Length: 511
Length: 83
Image (cartoon, rainbow over all chains, first blue to last red; front, side, top):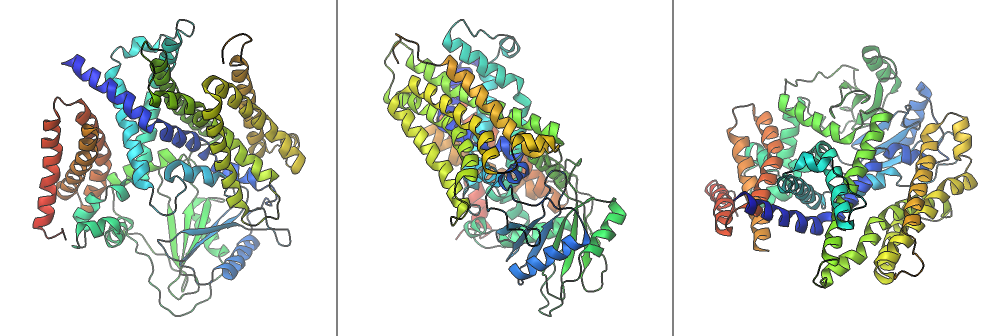
């Protein structure tokens, strides 16, 4: 009975791993640097002027937003801090709509180059860079598959602890990959489970809205509510926040100076503690100013907020009651987003995320090693997987490095530069995949890791040559934030070079 | 292949029905029950998928997961929520 179950689980583990492995690998490899998305964006906008908080800063932000989006539903100013030393502006034409973003320039200085920056990896990671919520169902399904794979993996490997202390890199190729897979799986097991479970939190109420519809449903046919649950979502959100959004009065009222609101909030929270200033219905009589407290040090995704009426400056108190379940949800959400974490913890997230990616990669390799060295001839599918593996597994980091290089090397004056950067990323990845399919498995592993080494090592040099923000001047100025991107690239390149050296074609052996 | 279909369709329907049922019946304030049910839905869905692949017979999988889904649909139809 137990043996039969284990066999069923092993078969499920293998097959679902093969079906979902590449996509899950992509989600982990792009999700890991996404914990540094602000830092990456800072690196990718070398012209952006470091700003310091001042009343004058908020005046300039207001003037810019007034010019760019006078009729927006909301404006948000994200104030500079140690992590992200520039002022970011965003606005939405409707509360449910997509936000437009830009970096506030410094007076007469030229606007920084436009880029998607770290946000591209972030959006690729959980929504495949698709607009709206179209891809959420797919990424949620992938996360459920990941959870099921982990659970089935645990059931399959009963000798859990014993396997953990076993690593036999020299015994047998297949056995070595299996050991690596098991060590990564067991050592990082809590991380794999928690990061995948919490990753579902932000999207679960969209892909599984039936809990919400059961309590807040509008009585329309379920299919229509499923595809557009706006009514239920609004009722649910207002009940949870205890503070409904303002309704437009259609009576104009100029937006006042924002600095006094920040001062009032910081009197309560301490200086430098306001992270964003949001104006809802700017220019309307019913406008509100909403201040959110800096997330640092608080795991929960829920920000403490203060809201004021613009009209008379009075505070709008929240009537939110104790909500343990909602607080748990906000905690899990925050745990995934890692916005609370200090740099060291962020690095741990980054490394553990790459550990999950390595778990998936070793699983994929294990499959092909098992299938291609057996007694019977490998099937067409197995040969395809074996050939495509290096193109996906190594091609993706090459494309990511290429995204950084494109940011520096594309001519500054071209139109739609952010799109050109994204296209470079995908073209490089597709090219790597095609090369891998054409030149064969062994040569592809060697050629692509070699290419990754060259590309990654070149990043610090290209950066130093094209901007004044090279790693050395930055370290001299104590700006590790920018320099750490260069250093990480250098380390990645050296690591890839070491692997490529081990994989080099030996003279006399068949490729 | 058949099991995959059962796991995907049955698993989703089962999770949807159970989530709605929990959200509706948990003895908590409405918003809290909704959140709790939605948080649990992830666990329910994973368990349903793993069980679908581990269960003895495909018939049993369809009976349990498909049956729950049909019950959920029947309830929705009774409340006039189906077109």
